[in-house]
Image (tube, rainbow, N blue to C red; front, side):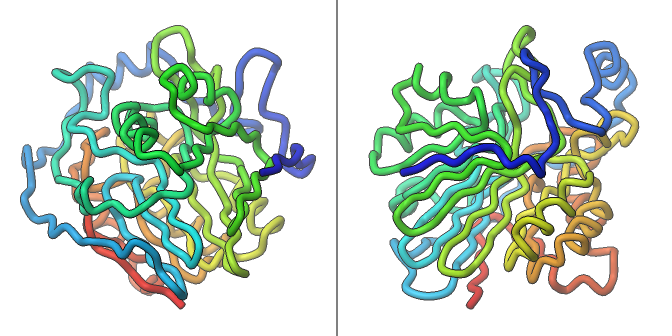
Length: 317
């Protein structure tokens, strides 16, 4: 395993103490968050939707790539020689508390007992809907998984005896036996408490495996980083792009894409296929649970941008 060095083509994003979004709006602070909560009029959604047909992934695939949407931003990527899991969450709440916080509205599309061996776990940032310690502990206890986190993120995992954990900064890479993981920019923020805001990095990942490039955007606003990623790596064969938690725009636009922005990102990347993530399981913003899906489908002429239900999968050559 070999970690690379930062790429000067990506802009500076650390001031010596905290990380930030270069040349872009920063995430709203406490007062704006309070204003949002006091004025929020969220679209109503069912408390729980029993429409998930769980699938059983193969332990390994011999050719091509199979993409299974588990839930939210959790995707199982299977290629010959590698099973990779992104931002895994099987918990009932995306929260530090068992009795409060966003509750699951749909069950995972793959049951825990049917999860195949996982070679690498990619964590895009430390928010509770993306870094779920309960799930990571279970994965760590299974053994044989390498955990990849953005800069500053490994300390939390190591404190929970979850590992091996490797930190990557934007532009750095980690080579594993059958694939290489590149850490790429995202426009977002980090925090798990009141005092640790932006003390760890946020990112996306470009995964190179057998002459195929998969881009996992993590959690991100729309920005110039999509063009930078295409310039460096070329058009991805597959892009996993977030479409949810975007209303109200005055509050969410610096950190989350709306569906129409995700389509613009798909076009800028020139991705062969894009699959929507960050929707359909937890209601984290004012739009309804399935509104991002409906909004994305309302745009004609984008058959290459797919919306899967939890448990659905796509096989690509």
